[in-house]
Length: 384
Image (cartoon, rainbow, N blue to C red):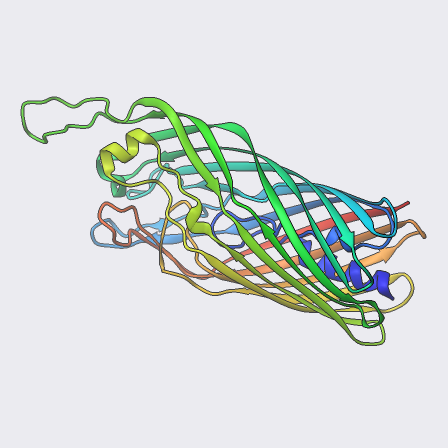
């Protein structure tokens, strides 16, 4: 029963959790440390968002905006190994943050705008178990981040056709956590802190000529062109994850996750010098999950969960045209042999309505409503 309890919660909390606020794509959970025995997990998730809207008219002509959300894949793996009955080690690879947005050409206010960003994270953790009830854990996270942004359309005014490329760099953060467990009822409460990670990224900017004195005698100058280094901070976060048995072979689980998305800024030197502001401005988010898992027999278990992230300010960046969401997630696992388990899940997201703005001035340029996404994930676990 204990093995099922851990497995069901891990599956439901990790499968295709990929539409949280800002640029978040995984919840950076450390629950692998609590799997019984030694285990290797290989996972793959696919997410297909549907983000469409329409121009706000006036000042722009009435026009639909086609789907700007690009689909993406999320591979990951995790290895957990017990050194002894007190110390456990884990090694995790995932892609915790990212962005894939593209506005179709021909749309007047935002057409041609794109954003691509990727992260790759390697996390090494160690857990020390004081007794059957209390444990602490922590470790280091090595992360690579890279991205590019292109702004185009009438809504961007004089900076339309601006591009910035941020070269990939590696940087290091850390993880700290503690947990309380009561094994006889499968109770566990774990609190995890993921530090922010600061990247100093080689930056290349290019853009249209900028006329510093308008109709005056000074001609347009390439003020948006240049190379520099930009500090981009991947945000810190807290995870509170819990579970408890409520009946024979039945588990209630959930989590509260807080992410300081406001730390994530992209402020290239030349763009800031010309406009007085940066490219990204996100709000902090708190996300809540509650679910139930049940073991139907010795081989098959299932789970269902709901995740909710409250809406924030409806004025958002065109590079993240949504705010808040509700997610329904169904999961199941099948024990193929004593050592091999296959798990899978499917998620449907109802994405919050939002109005992209460009800061030129700070008013809505488009209206995104009634958007959705879906995701599917699979995981193979091998116990040894």
